[in-house]
Length: 254
Figure 1: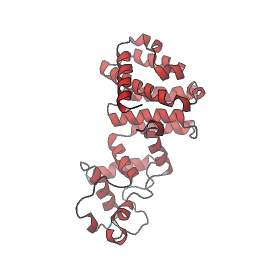
Figure 2: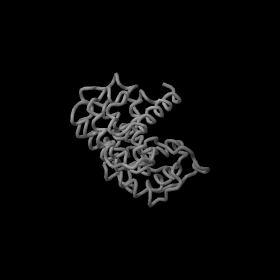
Figure 3: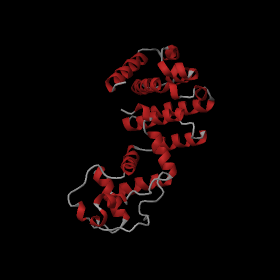
Figure 4: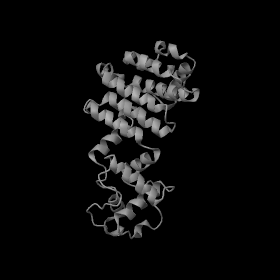
């Protein structure tokens, strides 16, 4: 499905949900959500019957419409029996309630991808899925920005004079790398965000904790190899799993 067709389909479903009385939502043609997960229609109707402001309800509808389109593409890979169980009902309701709290597109995208990956990943235990969802809900867009840069392994752009860098600590190198992609963040903010990710178990080291690599001049092994030292072995095993959950399932990537 092309990007334009996907967006058109999302808008159509979202508009239909907007125009449907809350009590009738479970009876609408809610595509894959109701077809694949009969129990979800009731959960969704229960949520929308609560006292929710219209501007939040619109966000919920858009989220549900996007999820519906994605599920239509993924339906052949999903274990329908799992979706009928109470364990998945917990994840579904927790995710949709989180959507009512957050407005940031990146946060909503992470929640949607986490829900989709929960449906698809049979290799991850239920209690781990629930813990992942709890951590993702607690992450701010600043956390996600730092995670995105660390996962990429290098900044998106290099500053002039980087070839002659002389940094003496891992802290200086990490600050340099992150500020190249996130220039609005100062060192203290970066340290706070990094250490919170460390406390969540996403990063294996604190911000000022060195990893035992010798910091050398960039010209000794090349600039890219030098810069890679700043993020090498930073992500924990749990951190790598979390990143895989906030990313879109591969079959949906365009």
